[in-house]
Image (cartoon, rainbow, N blue to C red):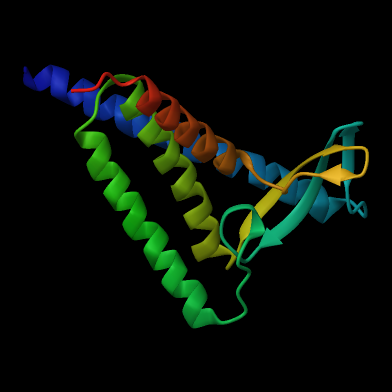
Length: 161
């Protein structure tokens, strides 16, 4: 493989991760700005989508909320280690599998940034139908979830070697 091709592949990888991170940061910035300037507690987009600012001290979808700083910091360190492992996995993969790993890493860094900078993750997308509300999530969570779903589907369609 030529050096130019390798540089282009690494640049694409970095740009994809950075773009996902940037989309997450911009969305969270806009939500924070809106709620800092508004007395509203919720912004209703339509009958099934609302913007509702939640500070998530737990892990995915608000599970395992922690009040102990030591445990919270250990979970943050574990998340960082998992992201490093996923980067390593992405180096060994190709195609859609590689892109899926990048989606997970970009979203993971978005949420990890929140954990380190704010002490909790900013969640704000509230999907609901009548009285049923799904977990409130963010743009990073969408990329992480999509990347994981793609990896699961790819695993189902892999040929047995």
